[in-house]
Amino acid sequence: MLPLTWHKIVLLKGVVSKVVSVIADLFRDLDSVVLKAIPAQGRNDLLAYFDF
Image (cartoon, rainbow, N blue to C red; front, side):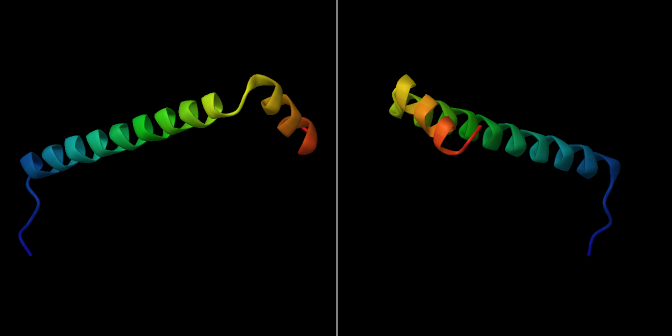
């Protein structure tokens, strides 16, 4: 196994940061799509159903 140099560590950190950012954006988009699919009144009914 090759030793990690500072350059590789910094590069890896940047890649991991970008992947986390992309995944967060996907979940944010998914959340907005789900909320748009449920009418506002339906959202309130769901909250009452689950006793929030």
